[in-house]
Structure formats: structure tokens, C-alpha cells
Amino acid sequence: MRVGVLYSGGKDSNLALLEASRYFEVSCLINVYPESSESALFHYPASELVDLQAEALDLPLIRVESGDEEEDQVEALRRALEIAGEEFGIRGVVTGAVKSVYQATRFQRVCDELGLWCFNPLWLMDEVKLVERILGYGFKALVTRLAVYPFEERFLGRLVDREFIEYLRKVGANVSGEGGEYETLVTWMPMFKRELKILKYSKIVGESEGEIVVERAELA
Amino acid sequence: MRKVLIISTCKHRLSDEEFVRPLREIAESLGYLVEVRKFTEKVSPDSGKVIISGTALKDVDYLGKVENFEWVRAYEEGVLGICAGAHIISLVFGCGLRKGKIIGAREVDFKGVKRRAYFLTSMIPVLREGFEVLGSVGDVPAYFKVRGRNVYAALFYPEVLNRDLIIDFLEEDY
Figure (spheres, each protein chain N blue to C red):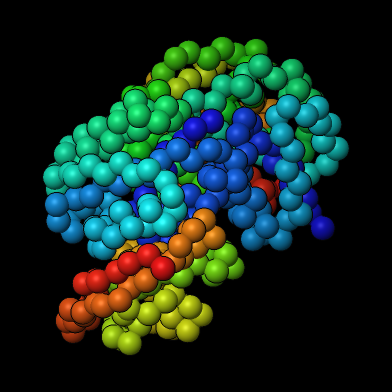
């Protein structure tokens, strides 16, 4: 079966992609990006780097912009999946949904309306096991946004590693970032044919949260 | 060691990650030894609880293998069917299914106690006498059992918002 993978560029969608590739032919990546960071359905941070990630993966990318309202996002998703069906003949969609019933419900409904199979291989995965799996596969996942108290700026712009996980554990945060504690940008995982190199970035840091703005990046 | 058999109703192995792994993880967290088999296999469980999983909304292959579940009629140790598993239990005990789609969280009335539950189904059991409805959404039987038997069926996915139902099923002594 040909499938498309909903792809934000973060660790969860990359893990979903990797799991899907074991069983199906992944025909394209699908990225729905919101106008602002208010979206509860799709990730926003660093989404402009998705083009480079798709190139690194050597997979076609369908990008559709969405408004911030729920109906806009669902409509954008529907449009993106229709394009994926027309251009790549996908019969199924793979998502990186983990715990959000809100997300899962909307993905399932749109897939059902379009007659597509919906796969959520990370669904209900234990937060520690999810991160362990990512580290086990050798993912390089850059922390692009961090909103954890007490906030430690030194982790911003660094790769997710055991020290970072230990920090999250100590402060009682969800270690997989499911509650929005952090966002990631994957610069390498086993399907990447080239590594994404972040050459320059700046930090925007507040009292209890911060994010990085990538200014220059290229494929190695 | 206590054991649990999980029967996957999933056509595609990627769906096992979504519909079987969470059940396995709950059982293993309680110290159970878990065996997983596919709906296409003829199994004859001899001891331990059995959970029949759900599957993807578009997946209906399990309906062509209901004969592989005839053993449920005589099994005494406890069976819980989830969504597709609930469909199978309904059919094994002579009930029908009607078209009816429910996707997302709904409030289930458990005999006066209301709880949210996550549904992903395109078919609703049409129960006959011999079943006890333990939870419902309007006229939809959401959680029911075969009267006088340790055979339970959840049309929703209890592993999502109602893990305690799975834990109670596994831990209860029959």
C-alpha cells in the first residue's frame, strides 16, 4: 500500500515515518503548516526547514498552509490529502499522534471522509519508551523550543540526549514533550540520506521558555 | 506467571502498533505474560484471560474469520472484545451488526455514571436477549456482557480514556 506521512519535521513524525517504511511504500510527506503558533492540530516551530528534510529523505513533499481556526486546519488537511491521493496514489495516511484524542479524532474523520486508511503507530506509546526508541535509532533531534520550569537555556539548540531526558524527569515534565514542553527538529535519522546541518541560529529566550530561530541550514 | 492472550484483528502489521501494543503494555505493566496471535489463526485458549483487539476503521477482514472465534462460546476464563472484538463477540453469540459510524470521544452512560470514551467504529451491534448492557450512548450498546458468562465487549477503546476497565477485567477473579 502506498501511504503518505503527516510530517512536521519533529521526532514524532520522523519516528512514525520510520515505522511506516518497514511495512509500506511511503510515497510522500505531507506538511500542513499553520499561519501562527496557536495550532493545536499541527506543529509550527521550524516548519520552514521541512523542505530540506524532505530533500534529505529524498521524498516528495506536499505543503499546504492553514489558517488558525479548527475548520481551516481540517480543510487544509483534507486538501493536502486530496493532492497526495491525486499525485501519488496514496491509499493510507500515517500520523505521529501519540495521546491527543483531539488530533486523532480529526485525522481519523478526514481519512474516513476521503476513504483512506489511517495509521497511528505511536498511539498511546509510553513517553519513556518513545524517547528511548528515538535514541536507540540514533535520531539527532534538536531542541527548537523549550517551555519547562525551571527553564535551563543550555538545552535549547542541543540534541535530545539522556542528560536532557534526565532534566525533564527531574522537573516532572513529560519526557516526550507531549504536553508541549519542547519541540524538536530532526537533523538525522536512519532514513536520511544526507544530514541537515544547522549553520547558524539565534535564541529568543524568556523567563520560563525559549526557542531557536534557524538562520542558515544546509544538507551535508 | 499469569498469562494473557491478545488476539489481533488487524490486517496490517502497522495497525498492531496502534491497537495491540497499548493492550500489551497495560498487561505487561501488571506483570502478565502476554502472547499475541492473529485473527487468521485458529487458537484454542486453555487458560488465562483473552482480549480481542480493535483495528483500523477501514479494516473489515476480521469479519471473514468469525469462525475462528467459536471457542469464545464455551470459554470460562474471561474474554474482552474491543471494537472489532466486540463485533466478533456479537456475531459469535448470534447478534447482528448495523452500519453506524462513531469517531471520537462520546459520553457513555454506565448505569447512571457518565464517562467519556473514545470510539472508532463503523458498525454497531444489534443485541438480542442474553446480553446485559453495562454502558450506552443513546441506543448504542457501548459496553456489554453476555449474561452469566465472563464475556465482555467494549465498542469503544478503553485503553484510551478508560484503562481501569482493562485493568479490572484482567485483575478480577472469575
